[in-house]
Amino acid sequence: MTLRTSLERLVAEYGPQHWWPANSPFEIMLGAVLVQQTTWRQAARAIDALGNAGLLNWSALANADPSEVEARVRPAGFYRAKAKRVIALAAFVAEVGGVAALNRLPTRELRGLLLAREGVGEETADAMLLYAFERPVCVIDAYLRRWYLRRHGIDRIDDRTLRAGVVKALPSVAQLNEFHALIVEHGKRRCKTRPLCDGCCLFSECSHGQASVA
Image (tube, rainbow, N blue to C red; front, side, top):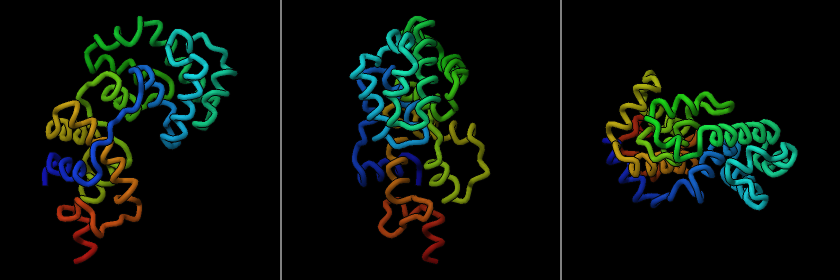
């Protein structure tokens, strides 16, 4: 089964996911930081709190009182570290002239700049690239590794190879957007640490699933 077919089956099973819920690219960038090590529900509470304080634009957030930002992002957990990171991210965006200025950069250069920010690892940077800047990149997370690598017995593939393979199979931003969102949904509902294989829409081509009934 190809990744394109997997995507079609996942859409049929769960429906379009409409990621990333936000009102601006910068809000998506903030969400990508705030959702680390927590649920989207908690991150969304922190974003709403920042919005209520008028802190969802980079110029305001870059100059905000750190204690106020800490109070606003507290629902997302690790509030001191996350407050420091989103303030620094806002200052960076302000320094370069805004999101539009960043969006004019080639993907490789932009990715490098994002990775240089404190608290922005590869998964977070690629989520920003895909959802905030609409670049055709693959977001590699624990759900994708579990389903595509471990459950198919091909866990020796490195991230660079996996990333390139997914983008080759699903080259459009819309496909990659939906694929990442649906793999997360599938991982939460079915392909868990202890998978629920019975009735899984991807069961017929899953090595782990087939082995479980052999």
